[in-house]
Length: 334
Image 1 (tube, rainbow, N blue to C red):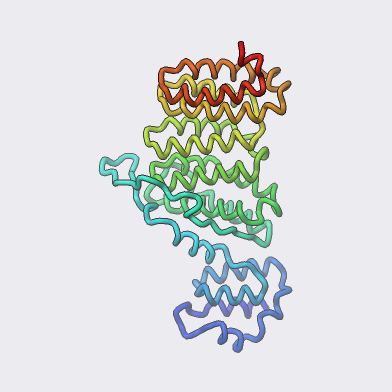
Image 2: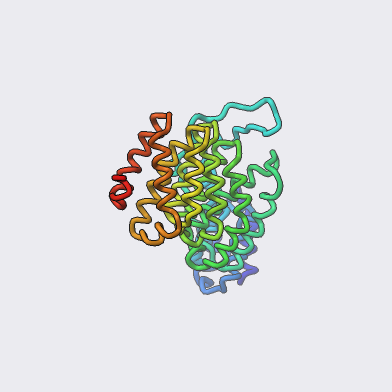
């Protein structure tokens, strides 16, 4: 049966063939819908390898009750990404090109879920991705890196985190250094995709990111001090997501305290928002917050921010102070 289906994939995508011809020449495909998973997965790969027209591929897979192949879906997804992705700025070159003023938002760039049939398929996906993330960013590897980050976002929206959680989490952790390279790229749209992936991982995986959250938090707090406003904003939003969905540790408060002392204004402004998230979450876990030293750090950070020379820092910290006062009124009055 698999041999018959694979022969169908050799049909030229621009030829006279259509779904009707396939059905009449090969019999009813739906009769083979109970084929083993590994055969279906192999068929999906063959469809992509032979560049079968998407309408024909969709027809075949629908008849077999298989979800559309990842690469066919990826074509639709990547076509919607603005051409600004091709705007480059070489690290070592002087002829930097102009980049867009704003990156595409998560709402305008549609990310379609990617569903997998087997654990082996997921393991193969992670293994295939790893090579492009090695070394520094170059003109040869930045496009594959960007595409693979988009693929990771699609996998996250699919069934991999729920049906193959251990493999998915291990794969994400193995690629995280590469994801951080993408997030820190000078290419704005590429950096946006990397930051959005980490934000989505924090929202979806939550405390499963605890073993690596500190290194991630350090990276994005540092990013928030970037001179490029868009990059700094993405660093702030990603740090907020990590603080909101992972398990609190006193080192998180220490990072916020350090940010409050930065010479750069941006992290000092953002620090009030990060501290507000911590304080709100720890209102339900006060004893631990006090005993680990988090409360003392919060009080010290608020005093530092309220005395800051920059008005925006003081304004943001005042809002944090009133949240703090709701949980620890005695400290606030003192």
